[in-house]
Length: 336
Image 1 (cartoon, rainbow, N blue to C red):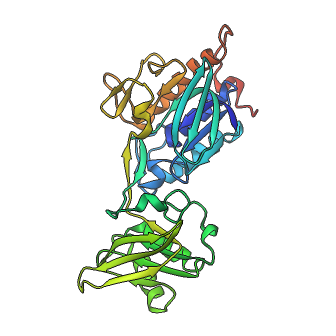
Image 2 (cartoon, helix red, strand yellow):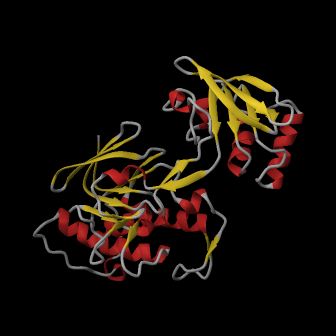
Image 3 (spheres, helix red, strand yellow):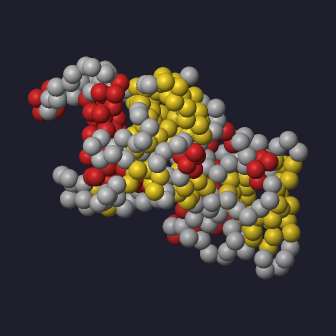
């Protein structure tokens, strides 16, 4: 059981800045994100994209902003659960929430802050029946969190973008046998990565199946093989493997949040703009996942929301205790 003052669902830029604002008020934060790294869209979709509307930065690359937010949060020692998503949220009493992830991790918190951006980034799955049978530790995963898990084992990667290419290159020295399956003859990734993958195939370090689609997955208790179809020759090929990693990108969805009793407007959570609280006391929503009149989906607006939320959360956690705000230029930033 993980115990914290504030459980923040979503480790994007707004969730990361909330650590700082809560930390100034001596509240500890634990962040949960389905992605295997912090940063949300900034890390997963466009890490090299310049951002021009962050105060004090005429231009900053997305990954640099994430790195700076992490440095800013360091004095407050946040903790993280990455590569997992919250499946259940239970309010057991005032200032008493229990969150459970899809992997069974439990987080006990006094306040819950939903900073999920556009929602949970769920993997785009191939149209192959029976995938669910081998998910959850039985051979099929949609992201790679710990590469060492696959050392000396057989793996099939499916996809043609940067993620599929980068992992193929990296895991070529980790897996005992690695196969890349792609539906086309051309790749969407960086030319240098494409050249490296083609060279690995020529040297026999990986197997490469182009113009090929996943056809079926097979096994008993665990995945044992996949079948692919060459769309040019119509040949069906059976590949023995212990792991299949389809890397077809991610799509944002509201996910389990839909079932938590929150007031929703389409795919966003309605909030009170006084403090970005929801209709459930003790639960807040900040960043792109919330909605209100004249809402602007900008990172800097999310930062503003995180600040007001933190002061409201402090009052909620500490009823009756008065807090006098002091500027950081006066009191500095102190670890705890």
